[in-house]
Image (cartoon, rainbow, N blue to C red):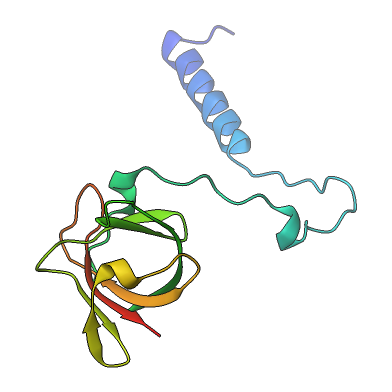
Length: 129
């Protein structure tokens, strides 16, 4: 008995549909019997470029000053450089305004970042103990 061209095409379509459905089934395999690595064994992620670090929020944060720019225009907190802008950044210690030059490396501060900072985030407020 001869089959028509249409019947052969229909058989091919049905066969391809069955193969595609079978291929989409997920197979899971357990590799070895080891536990997941400890958090200390996992390497930290690489630091993101400055554009990805731009922060739009003004929430209060805390960090340790790791470096200061000799010009007094920037400080580094936890590896991220933050701009000190004259007339816009306010530094406070014990309830009194202080100059940014009195900040020291290793000092823990609380700070806010100005919204809309693009290249390097600019500081709005710094609380030093």
